[in-house]
Length: 123
Image 1 (tube, one colour):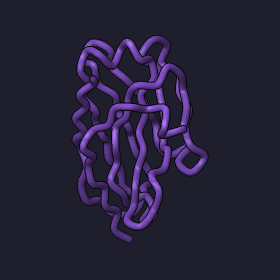
Image 2 (tube, one colour):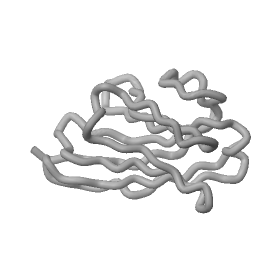
Image 3 (spheres, rainbow, N blue to C red):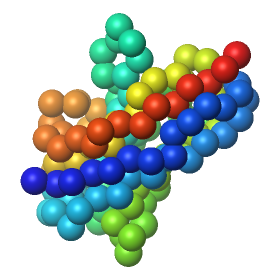
């Protein structure tokens, strides 16, 4: 349904910053919410942050609140994740997700996923 392409991952030192981008196809707008999830080796896929196209309302995981900011540019059909004060435990593959009617951290409510982009934080 919705095609999502993440970019911006890389290797950074602890305390550094990185911005991820998710370019979405037009179909993403009909399903209002989009989100970022992450998955480290041997771990479950974890919710990070979500945002709505219509109002820009956000919902952020307590594990990253105050450090990460999610935003979107409707004209570019792109969602961003600005990551500051990065920690070693933030290391994971970050995935962009779409398809939810509402802001939620439940991964089962997102039906479309990008291929993921690797974020590695060195200690």
